[in-house]
Image (cartoon, rainbow, N blue to C red; front, side, top):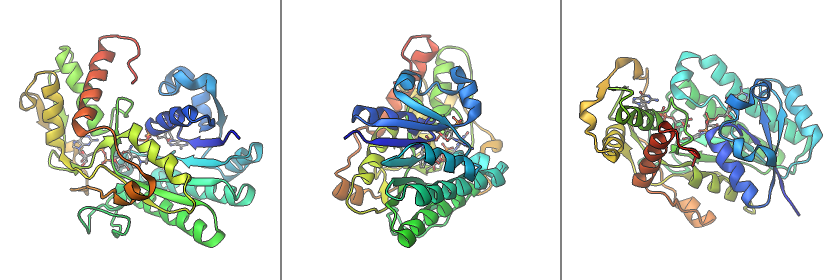
Amino acid sequence: MTKRALITGITGQDGSYLTEHLLSLGYEVHGLVRRVALEDPTRRFTRIEQVLDRVTLHAASLESYPSIFHLFSKHEYDECYHLAAQSFVAESFLDGFSTMNVNINGTHYMLAAIRELQPRCRFYFAGSSEMFGKVRDVPQREETPFHPRSPYGISKVAGFELTRNYREAYGMFALSGLLFNHEGPRRGFEFVTRKITSTVARIKAGQADELRLGNLEARRDWGHAKDYVRAMHLMLQQDEPDDYVVATGETHTVREFCQRAFAEVGLDWQQYVKIDEQFYRPAEVDLLVGDPSKARERLGWEPEYSFEELIREMVREDVRALAGATGARA
Ligand code: NAP
Ligand code: GDD
């Protein structure tokens, strides 16, 4: 029988890749979107334009329990992937209140509505390596204690705990993926990887002459979003709900990402990168590197992209998009 899935955050990087993955598996895919997005489809649906005729979109507000309740009154879902969030860490320092509101209350509304109306619907919560923050173990595993360093990280710890509590208190199939940074050509321009690759393309095309960045020493475990959405789906197919770290197990500095991205187009990064204090954060997460052993052993999950392939694809797609080629979204 065809399975029906609901994706919140369907217009985002992960939502778009997950939609394509679930459609390829024969799912019927529904998405929650903001009403303003439905009113401005050409700008707001760029990541899902290629699948718009194959998905059902519902306007709803994550800030309103009645709105979420109404959404779950209309259709029965087998699986729900709750990806919608204010996901930019730097923004969460500027407006911690709205980050908390959307990320914590939005998650609570989803869980409460599912419990009330569709308790058999399987629920995925988009947890984050930002929850480990000032890390207590290297590499970070499912058992590593949390020490979030931003309002965003705090909101994800709260969402994780809410999800666990609904699982333990009400027997719901609700779990969290503890996903490390994952990127790709659809990444938002404000995140460091896409900021770098898009600026590299502009510099190469003669449209920019510098790249202003903050902390080059931060280390991240960067994978490709296409690989990570496969893990989300696998988690919901298991017999028992459980939480999983999803990571590559490799860590690299922002400096190294820059070096490789500029080298892709034959440029020396040191001639273009300028340090700008405004991009430093009040509290930094210095080192992230995950141990994906549990996902590998229990889900049979392996990433297909290497760090080098990720950077190559992102630079290539940004160069191509700038050159006006069609099909810029890989
Ligand atoms: P993204 O590209 O920033 O997408 C965020 C999505 O959330 C968008 O569809 C956005 O809709 C939606 N959204 C934001 N605020 C909303 C609101 N108030 N009401 C309804 N929808 C709202 O993020 P992503 O990289 O795909 O990440 C997906 C999820 O995984 C997020 O929860 C993120 O925190 C988490 N995560 C990401 C990573 C990573 O490295 N990418 C790692 C760990 C966890 P609009 O298009 O309308 O703005
Ligand atoms: N964005 C940005 N811009 N980051 C910069 C810059 C800059 O100009 N210069 C240095 N950085 C450093 C940041 O200080 C951080 O240490 C690192 O680059 C990565 O920043 P982001 O790409 O913004 O991602 P993030 O690690 O803070 O958060 C992302 O990954 C999390 C998982 O660990 C987001 O996708 C989160 O939603 C996700 O949960």
